[in-house]
Length: 127
Image (tube, rainbow, N blue to C red):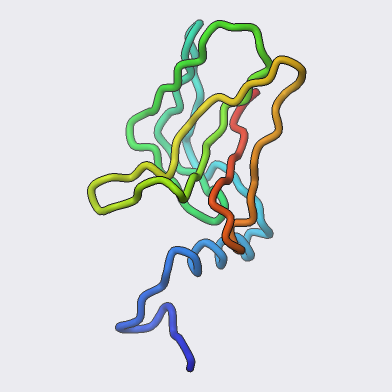
């Protein structure tokens, strides 16, 4: 059987689209435009823009704010894809911004192989 993905009356799946982006960009992630960061003593705001993470284009409309807390720790602001979360026409919970922490060193990001069943992938935006 032959399957066409980007042809009339054929549907490209998110898995195929992201795999194509990843391979074309040699598995690099990065900001496409915008995404400026600003902060207060207890929060970080990510400005409007677009980023490519694990081959998936992600847009921030307006801005997103993450509470940073004030405890003493090594911290990284990450954008996280978690494919185990909900994605419907009306609800999208598979992408979030969060702060990961450690008391001994900057924590490692998790980057599971999204081309082979991985469901969790993080990219650091700041530390």
